[in-house]
Amino acid sequence: MSVLFSGMDKTRAPGGEDAWRAWLISRQQSPIVVHSSAMQVKRLRVLARRIGSRVAAVLATIHRAIIAAKLRRVQRELKLHTSDLRDYPQQPLILGDKWDS
Image (cartoon, rainbow, N blue to C red; front, side, top):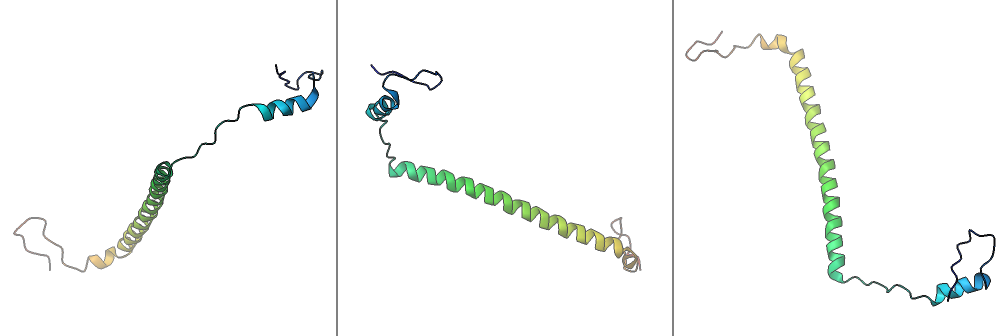
């Protein structure tokens, strides 16, 4: 019969630390698990899918930032050049009307 010693007591377990080490060595070890190659392939697929989705999210964020910057630039240019637009003929609002000249 082995004595379990937690180290919480001030009294030493009978046999001391050597008995504890002997019990640790003699106990039944958990079996070594060898995963099949199919399991490793599944794990790699999951990892690749996770990496791919993160890369896609980063690229989508960069794409949105580029589009927003281009739209801001175009809007600023249009605000600056509104006086130039008055010089060009305007498209009629009603079909069949003549163009301004």
